[in-house]
Length: 284
Image (cartoon, rainbow, N blue to C red; front, side):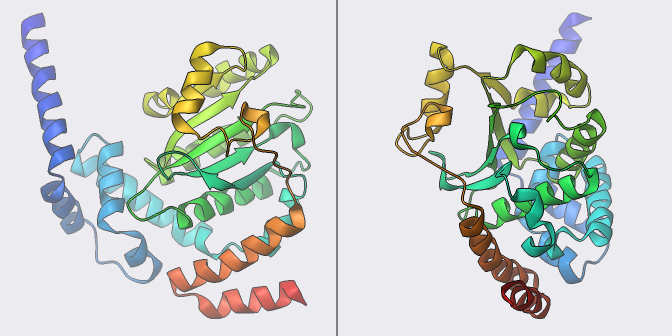
């Protein structure tokens, strides 16, 4: 019996390897299965997009189709591409989440998160702020790169500043279901022991693929140091994460950058007029 299981497992692995090396047929199959697209959905559904959803569902076209259709429905109502910095800038005043001014060694965009700087309590606005920054991180990926990295600094973290389990669960749901294969790795840098109890609850909502991408790293741990150095140039990496760069969050400077990126976002999605109106009002 175990011999048959091994053969079946080997066959599945061979099929998956073949699909990863030659994804075109599965991509075309998924394309044909999706209803005709228009507007932002037609821009969203690139070949790279189809591939991400197939990878997330182990190249099962029916499951990938279901997942993608649910994302398209979510995007049509949530409209993440239409969120503008001026709408959620107050969430970023303390620098609790922002896009870093450097990439990792693989060209991946880096989002820096400092949960100890939590400054608001409204779950919907907190999630909207994060979704905006995820979209912005994707916008700033170099050609050919699909993934981002999260650097999470726990300085100042406490149960008082921690987001609720409900917020964490909703955030995980959006990341896993609507941004598949976008997170390469999340480094949790020197989390306090108290966080471990919260993590055990949150981990329950993570699928195995996502959970595997979460890495706990510690300043004085040799393996942690080697892992960080394999992903980052220490000259770029902030001192808070064991690097040599002095980085301070400047809200005004970051706001100017985001307003400029809002124009790029609007042009990408064909929403130029709305963006220009928001930018004009934001600068007034």
